Image (cartoon, rainbow, N blue to C red; front, side):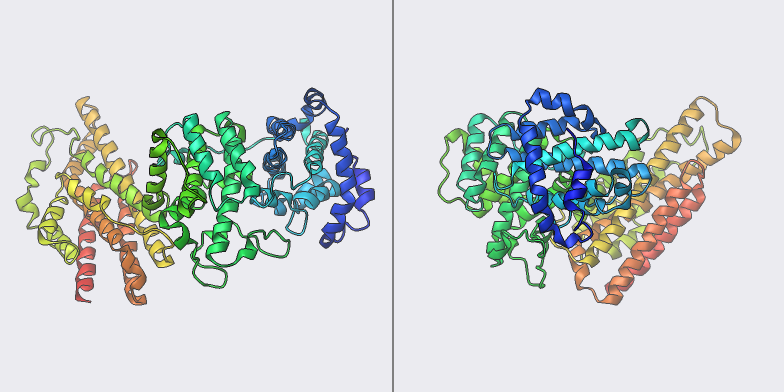
Length: 624
């Protein structure tokens, strides 16, 4: 049995032109969905696979659809919800793969994808319209959004819709076989999440006893509605069974629902808790994690759950360089059946911290062996710092860059007798202290450190000195990352671009110096190459000083980033103009130091010009 599109046409034809009549469309489609469900229910799992497994192959995720049916038949109260989550995510990804066969950019939202001419052309208007009725825009039954945003309680959605969507998906496979040559569809690779390793506060492997502690925490949390508790219990059970993907799916949807309750309570808008109406904006993670509400008043959720927990949520769900786990998993971009234990561990941790932040209905008793779990959750609820905010990324990247500056110290090179060049030993601290760079750096640091620290930091700028103090200066910067103003983020973006270009210079110079030394040892350097290598060795200490000066500029501006939002417009523009000139220095250095250029004298001139710009800018700053 596959769906008869003529039957769908007969049922819906007189009102399909009016997409605002979705309520009537759902009513008319309900008997068809029920008939399909009765058919599916009459089949054993083996019979279902025999009839439909091949027709589901077009999705590239047939196993996910089979898993979704098994969830429905598990006799668990959450089974149908799990089925709909798996099914809608996999179907969205598969329809996107079909859309891409037409060589057009795929819409990012399912409702927009289902409105495209491309899908109507491939599958036919009425099949696509059936999908729009059930999982399309907010004015439709909107099953996808209702289930993925955590609105539906267990068993609240009829299982007939799951059966209908399963058979409809199989029916699409018949059409794919006819419309696409050989029925072969190229599928996008699922995403992986190396970022999860950077979320530093993961729980250890949990024993059954410790899982019981967390389960009790869920059961007694005032932010989890009792009607939703079966989801939380099932998530813990799936974790025990090592079915981590389904565990994560359940936790993410219920994390949003529970946070919605806290958000509504904190902001005194309890009517938003159950809002999933077609004419009203859903209260979702995106809104709850903004600094202000739609009416521009402050979002009081932060006061309720704390800054650390908000940072944790933003890292997991929102920041562009983080995993953005809920978005990716709900749109079918992950291999749900093979999600790692590390990811499940972390989502379980975040969910548990929410319960700690909000507080339990009553004390959660536990054995001494499990007290450390609760202690760690309490600690995290107040001490977490962002990993994926742009400012946090800047700090990490800058620290790594500063460490790389010492890599040139150990570069092998010929003695000045063997290859005529200025000996590096002449770059002494005494000589450095009389250089323009020393004066320029002193101007920069005035007012930003005491005299002793200034002297120590300036010593880090000398070509072959260690950079430990500069690294410590960077690491010890206390940064505020929650809800930062746009002006700060603009400066941070510039600083990160400078870091990236400077890293390129470090790599370029190290590679060329290593290659040339190898060629010199093997006596493979031609006369012109020997001269170029000598110029590199002559100028390399100057390059090192320039790159260290750039590092100090970035460290200082990062440390003072909070001041940026208080700057008058002219001062902010002057800072941005200066940083753009530093970026230009770094970009030009990267170009001129590339293997295809090797213009070392020109690089040295750029460094001299940078010192002059730094002196001019900070002289003006200190006069204000």
